Length: 329
Image 1 (spheres, rainbow, N blue to C red):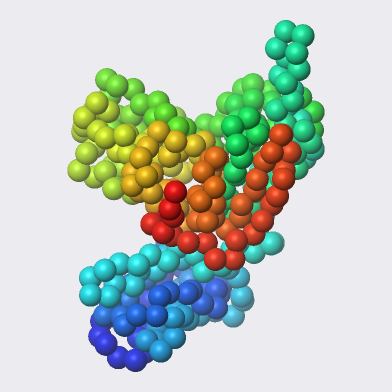
Image 2 (tube, rainbow, N blue to C red):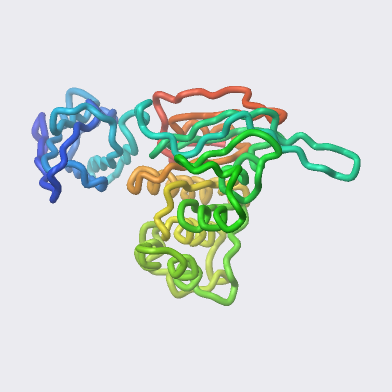
């Protein structure tokens, strides 16, 4: 941490690792005088990290090692005690590994003699550490796609892959293991057990996997350290959703799938929930997909995919994602 009001601020941080790689060339911050600059670096790749920030330029210049590669970093600039969070410098590079992939996926539901085509030949890749928002009106097929990617359902045609695993060929037992070990789910409704405290609701998941977070760590990450022993009925809607997020991330999933996570919340509470989801993506590197009909939410993501009538209508890259606190709807 550096304090002071000089024209340039710099610091050097040591980490216990022998691996080195380079951070993005810059992180854009608001051009304001800095009283304190703090870096929280969580991916543990660098043994030597250097940062500088100047009042003359709204850029935080970072450098380490010799190889150039995009990594996640969380930066806090606190002018006069007011914090500004910068989640990510630039988007994930194109060579980041594909975590989830849909290839020409079709889903048809049989309703008596009627066939409902929920998905029509959808092809989509979700890369490691990516934050993607999937937009679409009700009935566009976005929740169906999430259920397929999460192993909750199987496609009528096409293929789904998690890394090298073909989910379309997986048995029920294999899909159960895939969900348990690799996927965290967040739904519109919190699905908490009323008779259990927040801590106990999270503990239900941590007991099912190897090397999870403790319930206490997971709840602290979502800002509920002081509400661990409260029952769902004693929590607000936003707090209940944050318990659900803690439950989803406590097992350290590779993928976090969020289906209308703010759908049952008011604007202010919804923004807080989106802040938590974005922070989990940035700090833990969890590949994240947020499904919503709320178009402004797309501004916080690096990638925005729009579904219409069971097909991908657009797939756009967002060069300048904004913090959740700046979203308006």
